Length: 412
Image 1 (tube, rainbow, N blue to C red):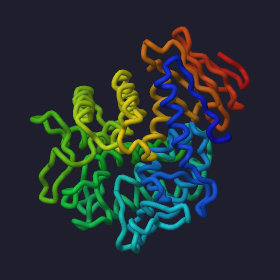
Image 2 (tube, one colour; image 1 turned 45 degrees about the vertical axis):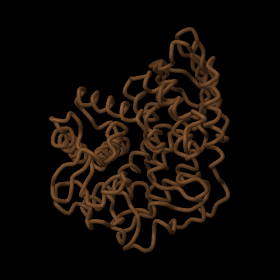
Image 3 (tube, rainbow, N blue to C red; image 1 turned 90 degrees about the vertical axis):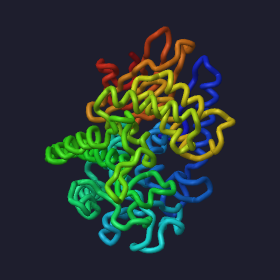
Image 4 (cartoon, one colour; image 1 turned 45 degrees about the horizontal axis):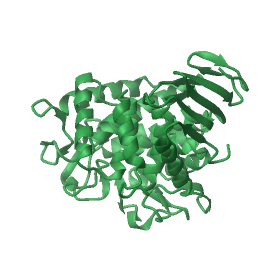
């Protein structure tokens, strides 16, 4: 589908203008003329690069902007660059000229890499498939090689204490940072909670990818369950009523550091009370001040957890013209995704070609519509009016809309 055709309208001009800003801002970062192929910026603006963490977070918004080909190309470049000489790490950041970004890579013994990345990438590939119905994510040799290497050789290579969890090999090294948290003090951390959460999500997504192919996945699914128990029990600080963020090299747990929002983003907290405490902590601490990279996750986190008031609060924070560093690409891309899947509550699943909706709109909105919304290789139009949703199916396929079949070209 041609990029940028999606349109969002509603009777709230602040939200309508916010979507238009995010759409135009994100599209300004898309490119079709680099040596790497079609791609979009997913790093610091004007760096001419895309890094794994940002790309994995961009793909939902990128899909709705008609940038599936860009996302697949970048995900594939990361998958193909995994090498034994780098302990099965990919390049952390790749330039539009198809080279590892120099500031992050000197050689295979000296390079920047955050260990949650491989698992995040597996999950991103599953999410891309569920939105696009692109069978390359299921059938491609390169993608499947990457999936298998991640849950096998990658983990074995980085698991120095044989507990099944990757950890830092060399302290104070940038080669194998055991977290997405890059703040000072992390150099003496052996493993962080967000790495464990990413691994769990990666294992769950790997199992789903294998299930779609009718291949064996039970061992990985069982390992995901084991790690879930470790995260939800051993990493919980009962006295402080919070999750530990990291484990120090001396074996002690640390409340600070780590990236606690990633536990909610990867949806790895199974106990409802612990999840409630985590979400409340994220919201209250976030209001005191957080960087935009973290804030960009907040709308989808709260919408995903059925808190549409906090979801809207953070969505409005992200589209605020006065937000410092709003031009960071992750903000605009994540905002587009949050509008469609959060505010409009649209959820797609290519496995059974189903589309469901949840009304996350505030009571003040009596009309909202999404037109030319990319879906399953085609598009849909979805409208909310008079308390209910309608769908126009232009995907070229029969889809299930809230459980009811809708043929191509029809409206329900």
